[in-house]
Image (cartoon, rainbow, N blue to C red; front, top):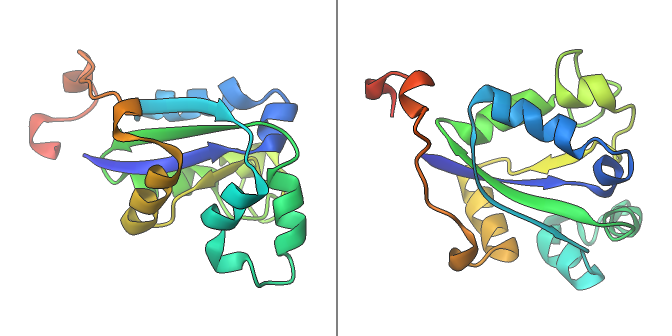
Length: 153
């Protein structure tokens, strides 16, 4: 099973959309293996968004991500990195198609509710930033055999 990192951003928390958005992942059959609420500090933001620190938009990104609590999560599933990103839709809520999370709930490029890893490598890096191995819960839901065929993973 593949894992991905998901961060429910300050706008998701402030707008009271956390459980509504999380339920989409649950409805899809993705397995939640870690979850915690935290405040992103400027130092943590620089670590998470290291590739953007020198870009002109970074100060507003840091201001946004540190403005209110976030909820960090790890989801597990088949092709979960791609599946989650497809469910989110385009980065800009204005360009995301209806039916995606951003298409249904966002009208901004920056305030787009959820961050998700863009590759297995990014997922491993981001999971390591936000979670210790002891915070990840290994479990197998009893309904797994109702979510996918045995030869699918």
